[in-house]
Length: 436
Image (cartoon, rainbow, N blue to C red; front, side):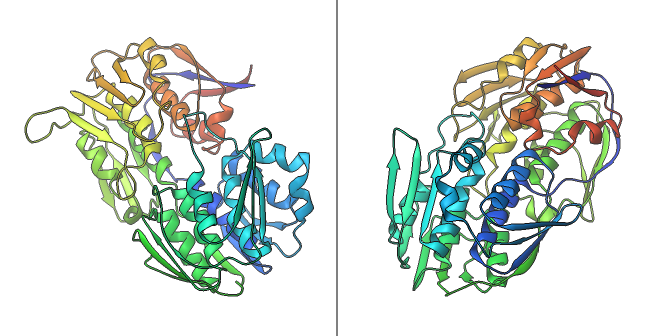
């Protein structure tokens, strides 16, 4: 198992380009199963989760060809449905939560979809009810083997319908969209997730011949078609990585330019960092963060403590709350971080408290942070990365700390951030990857 040795106190300087969006990649790759024709996808990030999904698609029979760095072609002409009953298929799926989005395309095109309970971050309950309730609305028969943790859906032909989703699940919305595009008749999805990555998926499917309207809203209308064709698609830059770099620059008092961020698709993220007192400039499609010795958290108009909470798009993505929390530890002022969606995602704060951060964990969903205003540096320690986003938050803390920290279980970070140590070292960080 690899570890990071992080020598803190080094300021960064230079330009960094965000990788392709992980969460978009997982949806788009699964969508290649909807057609027998070639689909070419560019800006694919070479991260663990994405590479594992590409290997899984190849194992199920998709012809995968690497055309250039970050660009692959996919042709799902001959799919081995029997493979979905194999132990190898089960083992691969269990390592990767994104594998659940294969079910919608498989159900739509072949009438069957099988998948074991998927893996992913250990951040609390992550129910899949929205996915399967949607499939059932479209006419599929659903079964769950409790003993084996195995889901299956079957349908001779899906039928369009109206549905009101019980939650605006991003992966659930994506899965249902991919099932509905080949259903008979019209499907209306209300309370649909409308993140930029869902918009990207819908636009790609329309280029393939689907008929989806209402894109960028929470009310989608899908007129089913008989088949889809090939297309080319380029992934957006990863908004979570953009946010991570903004927070990293502020926390380490660095000057940094983040290139080609697709600013119009960042939503509320820049504004929320501004409320933390972090200065930045939009320069075309780049974000420039000047060196700041101090940044002060705003309060609400009535003087009450700032509250930063996650919410469905266009609200703040929950994937960035770990970054906001660690950045707050060196701000001037206090903030309440409210993680509504996952009850275990704030449990990494005990590592920050060990480093000297002033944090009160109010309950599994809320933490109050009183910032040091850079007057007291965090101290180095040994810690373990519990999930992708908390892992990067701990990396940011270690980069700003006094002394050398050790971060274990960095495979979690590698799942979402490509060559993060190499890229940051090029900017002036001192991160060493070692085999433990």
